[in-house]
Image 1 (cartoon, one colour):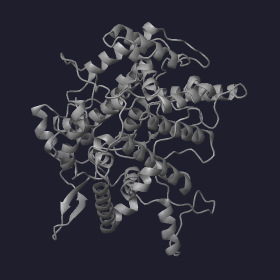
Image 2 (cartoon, helix red, strand yellow):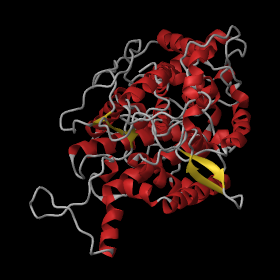
Image 3 (tube, one colour):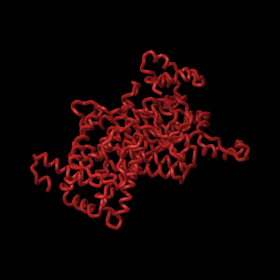
Image 4 (tube, helix red, strand yellow):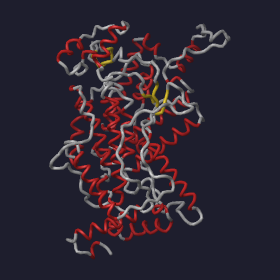
Length: 551
């Protein structure tokens, strides 16, 4: 029976019909009991990993076991939808979601003086139009290259071993140091994880990260005022319980990112890097690559209406043909059954008695940077509502690679990352190649009696990947060694040369920047004195305690 045959004013009957449709769509979906998130903490390195590098892990999260098929009741689906809408209304940060793209557009002029590798640089990469993005990347790349040409001593400190090798071939008279008297020469080893492994693995790690940027630009296209669909999680009626669970996971990602950024706005000890230290062909690298690829597919799928990971109903041969036929012949009925998104779906709105109980990034104690960090929190919250958990996990993970101050030229890891970052230019072809993945629904290999076990394995694999992503804090790697100073020592800033050209030079006053001081007025004067000597243990201990009281 279609809605047209019912009394249009009979809201109770309509809601019951929606619940029945949701139950049908979710009957094969794994759903566990409601749970409360515990604080995520970083676990010890897994077996087989090096002691100073680890893949970020979080605490285990209750996810249904393989093969379980808990069927939600109609009442559970209805209650889940009401709870989801209530949580969203209470947790919305104080802005109108409908006009958020206009707010984002108003940020851009203030971001265009971004320093390479800074949070503002990331926001421009994701939110600016293609022409402005290309211009920004070229200016940053040229200025950074010019700085190292003019400062060869800094270049030598962070030189890539591959570049060092090419330099040696150009200068065959240079002596190679002997390694432990074996007679074999070896290039000077840097502590930069990017120097581990071979050039091919470093290149693949960089291209994988560039894929992340392309995916985020695709997902954030509506905020650049591009005409792209948005399926708010509060309108995904057949998946209300799953969306509620995903929102909790998204909140945990935000909480953890806030905990990561707040106490160490300037510290770079144990920083994250995109370069995987695992050798090519190893189990650790293959596992990380598979999870990274699954996160990309899951993130892209959040922009589609169909459920991801799929359930057997979406893959079964007869159901797939029926859905496609119904969508083609009777879109209205297909929409009623949940096969198509609703028309003119409502946009999430904050509750009238607004009180946000979600920790967001603009609650930093560094007053001067609340707005800047608040932008990151607002983008993450928009992704949680407009896309879903995988997109939030991806965004928060990428944010970890950037800093408040930009780049410290004594830090080999940062320098290599930012050099790669500024060398990549987007094109329309790049964005087209990283388009939305086609969704399996009555596709080339639909479920039937002969291959049901194969597709059950596929579904179990999806669930295992989802569980791994929830439990994994980051898909990047963290070096715990003392390769970088606890606070940056040589930060770059924008200056003008005699001709008025923008150039990057060392900013001698970075330590006295507003917001770097403690909120206490009594500490401000001391924090503004940037004449400290980090080689003096007493001074280093004093300033570390003063500038990082939370550590």
